[in-house]
Length: 76
Ligand SMILES: [Zn+2]
Image (cartoon, rainbow, N blue to C red; front, side, top):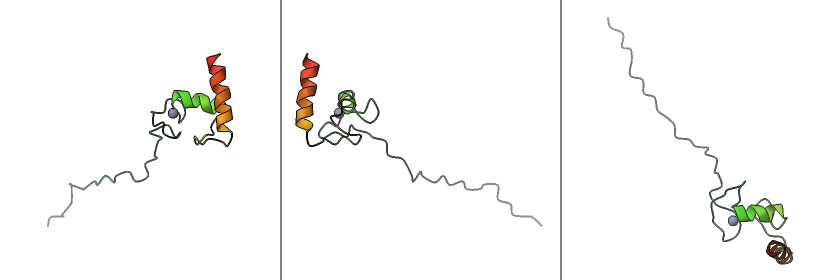
């Protein structure tokens, strides 16, 4: 009598299915740089802090105005 034990149990590693997609790129239009702070690149993180864009990288309606003011501030 020999019990048929199965020493070689197949351990199937399930591939990770719920991989959280990290932001690979700065979400601001046509930027595409690697995020360095939060989800933004360095420059757009500054934009975010200055209120030029929201967390998702979207520009508000008065973005142009804000951007102008931002550029002026930056230049001064
Ligand atoms: Zn950017």
